[in-house]
Length: 135
Image (cartoon, helix red, strand yellow):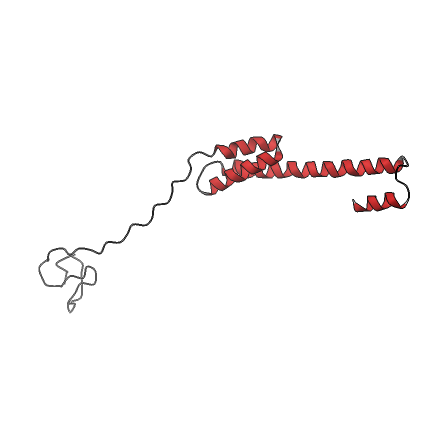
């Protein structure tokens, strides 16, 4: 047997259609209002432009800290759907390498300065070895 309301096949002993809920065997009745559900909340549209990622990538070669900050902001925007995620990630990596290089450079200068002072006789004996052991 078929339902008069939705036209789907149902068992012969069925009183109400399991698909539409209409009474089987009756003429199609006036359509009942379906329950209305609230629409899901609209999400904010992702940013279409991610210039900060490009700026961060460029500055990562010249100014490590500025490039790092801009690249992190650009990467955060890219996680929300903006383009240039790979440029932002490259900017973060290059900036970190740049900053690590500067730190190693400063440590080397300090170590060489202490070494040259010690070699010149400015710091002698136990003082020289105490300062050198800190590095």
